[in-house]
Length: 353
Image (cartoon, rainbow, N blue to C red):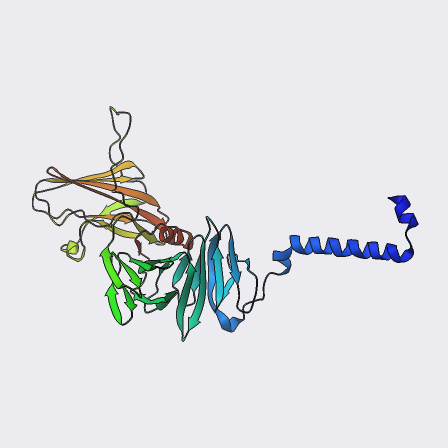
């Protein structure tokens, strides 16, 4: 190699050095492409949302750009941005007015703001979201388009099926879907929307995973089971007279999530009235927490009072004669992580405070 270099002329040496410089520069640029070409910054006037959380491979292409760049937590979303999520990935964005949207895995979605309204175009995959009060979202897919609005924290999911149309799912709170001049309420319902067939609605399972909650059973019998006792930070609050009239039994609904930051009260209301002598058993994180009996023809209602920082998985079993009813719900801190996880799992969410 040394002999070859010695036999080279000055011009040849300059050419070799220049070639190596170009080669190493190209390698450096390729390796650091995402850091060097982070993508043009979103103009403040085009800002419509911010990334709250993201997992795995999330990329974004801004208008008038040819390539996709990495999208991370805290990044600003501009009107017209295309967002792509890879396998096992998802991203949660929060719009300026407060509505939140989760873009599921292997999805390609374009986010825009048109005439002050959120406009979402699904090129591939699906989304889930929660609305702020009085906010309206238009969702497009191929030739189909629907407009969604509802009460505060009402939730929805939309899945695009190429060549067929869109499936729109509503949960516990009132949410309205407009399509070609027709409007329906999708509370606990789903609709299939297509320009060919119009909008067809049907009921959905009250439990998102399609399974009924079951009372945990111990594999090994216990001679002396621990007596029921609520953990520190939880207590029973006396129910107000006629307070059950505003509730629909059973409450909470299957697999519901309660989010709080300052504590509060959660009613457990399994049935409108006891036909026979009734018993309500409540388990906290799998351990017996409360057993309460009710007389015949009385209203079985218990208010659980929770303090700040309490998080728990709660299940209950209600026995009325030979009839047995059970359910479960979660109590979590009110933050973006808890909200995003519940939204991803398509669970009914109620924000206490």
